[in-house]
Every structure is written in structure tokens, then in C-alpha cells.
Length: 256
Image 1 (cartoon, rainbow, N blue to C red):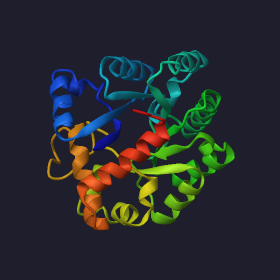
Image 2 (image 1 turned 30 degrees about the horizontal axis):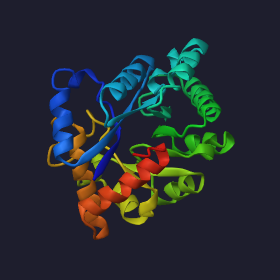
Image 3 (image 1 turned 135 degrees about the vertical axis):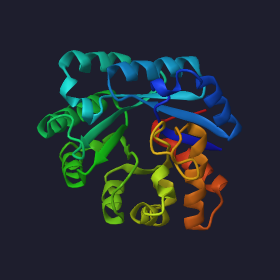
């Protein structure tokens, strides 16, 4: 049993063969897929897919790249969309200081606004943090962002920072880059953090794990992430899949 805790299967790269992708996921024992929005339209599409497919759940929110498009109207629309029963969290939100596609002060303001939105809705949050670890940690502490728990998606920080986030109510999600030869920091995190605070994800169609690197990523490949974590911890992929699936269900309050 596996759950892909962060996927973008609403992406246009999947429009021609989504049914086949979901079939391959099922055959790989990936029983659930969390489809994550990054702007309003992709959030709306995530909800539509969650309505259509039993195994799909939705996360809705505005990615830091799109923070400059966030308005009160968008906030109100997200609030309404969050009432759909299969919306399990708000995100992905956060800070991206690598590409800086929205001004940094705007990213921070929109991050704070979405934390407050999630708190109003009593929902966990999904955080995107790229090259902004200290700034994300500061906002998380100031806004008490872990009040309803959350996850650090595609975690790229070191072990001490992961411990800080876990203390504040966050799970740590490991993605495809753990399979890359130069991913020593992520491998150390995956080897050392408590297994009951870990999720696994693909972030598909991006960050394809070995041995499929260079191809489009998809939910069935989350098994490769579990295999690598298993190697590092002396466990089987199935054991990692089972434990991280329980964690994902607990975080997102999925009962079936």
C-alpha cells in the first residue's frame, strides 16, 4: 500500500493518458493520490478530479510563483472551494526564493494569508520551501502554522531544520530526488527522522526518480521513493509505503 501525497495529475502533460496513469498507479499498489493545486484554476481542476475518481483527493491553494495573482476575490473562491468534501488541505503555499517569480514580500504576505485561511477552515497546510528555509520557519512560528498540522513538501533542508518543523506540527515529505546520487542531505534526512513523521510523494510530472529520470514522472513511481528510503533504513519498500500511507491518512484525515 502506497499513497502519493503530492501530485499534479491535473497538469496538461497528463491530459491524453490520465486513465492509463491511474491504472498503472493501481497496479503498483498506489491506493490514493493527493492532487495539489498551485493556482485557482489548477485547484478547481484538482477538486474536479477528486469528484471523478475515488482514489483522488484535492489540496487547493496558491503557489509562491503565483502569489502576485492572489486577491481577496481568489481568497473567497478558495474558501468556498474548500467546502468540497474531498478537499483535505490548503496549499501548496510558501516561499520560493530560487526563481523569485513573485516579489518576496508578496510571497510572504500571501503565505501568511493562506495560513490564516487554513486556520479558519481547520485544515492542514502543504508548504513549498525552496531556498527560503529560515524565512519559512520564521513565518511558521509567527503564524502558529502547525496548529492543524501540515507537511513540508519535497523537503530539501537538513536534519536539524526538519526536527524544528516536526516540533511545530509538520510532517516531512520525501520525493524523487532522494534517488539521485548527489542527494546526500535528503538521504540523511530520510534515514534519520522518525518514520511516523514521514510522507512520500512524486511531485509529478516533475522530479522523476531513478531509474526513470528524464521521463515524465507519475504516481506509480512513488514506489521508487519508498524503495530508496527502505534501503537507507533497512526496511522493505512495502513497509515504508504502509507507514507513510498511515501518516498521510492521519494528516489529511482520510478515513477510508
